[in-house]
Length: 269
Length: 75
Length: 156
Image 1 (spheres, each protein chain N blue to C red):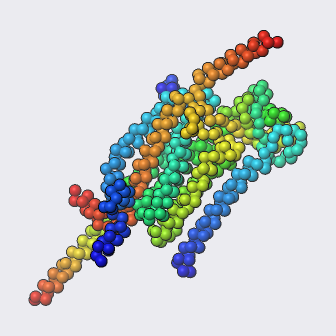
Image 2 (cartoon, chains in turn yellow, green, brown):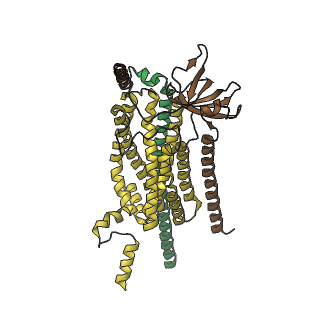
Image 3 (cartoon, rainbow over the protein chains, first blue to last red):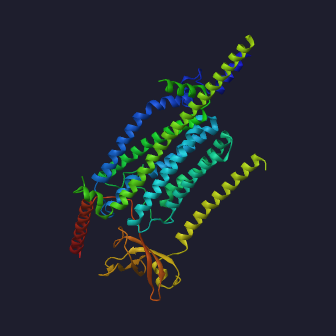
């Protein structure tokens, strides 16, 4: 019977399966130890690239791009507002997908990513709301308007806060992860509402400038720095997500031998 | 540069307050997202280190206790 | 109480509170946008209530904007295509406020059917263009219009 128990223990531990080499990356990614070590190697480079891209986009957008004919220079807030709003929504998808993978494959790593994504998404949503308010005052004439786009973004902030709160509502890590994942998945209905709100309801907020199906309704000199900023925000998001996930790994695996070896190796070296 | 001078860039024909305050809050929030986990990581690693130290101390204490026990027995 | 039940109770309370919050926000949003919103025609015909807070939206009529020399007072007309409503406001107008553009005025209608607005909002579209490009486009548009006029004249 020993062959049977061997087989079971190897599948239960989520170790690399010898039978299907094409799935090895998936199992490896599911290993907190592998992720921690690899991400430690990538982080400095990724951070450097993110910093360079963000700096380029900011200087280009704020100092070199032409002003808007109607709004003047206040339009430059777009270079922060739109990328933050973009990532607030993409980040929600990342969180919900991580939650779904956790629920389906019971992958610990996936739940850690989900937990790490919540505060980052919340901060990005806050940035989008804040810069939107500051932009709204000179252009629309009000900091805050109760319209569909802004209200659904506020609901997104509460969804992120809800996922964070559920993490602390349970003593058991498993129960907390499951509850958060379910809330994250249910909350995804809000994302198409945010996207479509400007078309479905009468709102002050302008329709999307960047569309997948057609050319952007923006002059190229203004659009290029915006594109750079969006790429920069994606890179920044990756850096922040990796940092927060690494901490979650340390918190949950602090009793394991590999974390202990890591600490003693560092103290020795 | 689109602006004629550094002052014009700061002022942005009256819109500078809005643009620069947005940027300041955004950068502060983004820095916090990166710096807070770095401090947290240091605290977590120190906690693990303390756990290891405590365990080593306990093992050492147990060893010396057993050593002195055997010493007493031999006497 | 049993700790597990306490936990479940907390969860239920959290869900109920957050659901109430979301529904409350959506209802508030719809009320803000719907109930108080009137077209210029509804106000001019006297259909809209007087001296209660309401909103009116429409296009700012070309050449209707009058400003005071010594204060921030401004008067203009908005139209929904059917009727024109006079709006008066004292304060800084948003950057996007312009003749021929959409605006929303909120305030109270007085006896003379003039909307005394406490807030003027301007709507903007998703297009962004540098000033020189916009000028060039306007010039091209005007030239085209004049071409059309000339052609129209020759047909007559």
